[in-house]
Image (cartoon, rainbow, N blue to C red; front, side):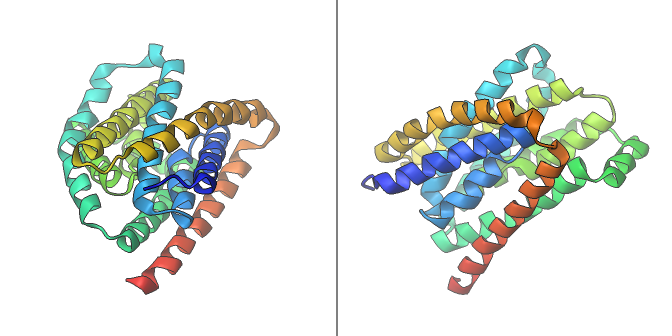
Length: 261
C-alpha cells in the first residue's frame, strides 16, 4: 500500500490518545487503538501498526517494574500462547475486512465488560476474594492460549488474561507490581510473536513499518502526558468514562459493519 500521510497522521494521533488513556486509567491501549483506527483505515493494517507500537509500549512499562518480574509466572501463560497464536493468525488470514471489524467490535464489548467487572465493581472483586480460588498452571496456560487466539485474530488479547490476573491478584499470589510485570512481559511477548508471524506470512509491509515507526514516539509522549495528569483526574471516574466511550466505539464498529456481512 502507498502511504497516505493523512491516515498515517491520524493513526499516530490515535496511538498518542491510547497511550495517554493507558497512562491515566491503567488500561485502554489496545482497546482505544483497535477500536478507533479501523474506523478510518483497514482493520488488518491497523492491527499491524498497533502490534508494532504495542511491543514498545509493553516494553516501556515492563522496564519500570522489571525488578518485580518472575519468569516462572510469565512462562505459564506463554506456554499456552505458543499454541494459541498460530490459531489466531490463521483466523486473521481467513477473515475479510468486514468480518475482522465485526470481530474487533465483539471482542471490545467483551473487554469492556470484563475490565468493568474485575477493576471497577467492588461486588465482583469482593466475590473473587471471598471465593479463595487460585488458578493452577493449566488455567494459566489456557488463559494464555485464549489470549493468543484473540491477539492473533484481532490484536485485542486482554480479556482472558484480565480474568486470570484478577484471581491471581485476589489470591495474593501476585502483588500489583508482579501482575504489571507479568502482564506487560506476556503481552509484549505476544505482540512480538504476532509481528514476527505476520512478517513471515507477508502481511507486514515496509510502508506499514514506516507508519508504525512514526507512531512509536507517540507511545512515549502519551505515557508522559498520562502520568503527568494522573493526579489531577479522579482515576475511578475517568476509568468509567473510558469504558463508556469504548462501549460506544465498539457498537459503532459493529453497527457499521454488520449490515455489510
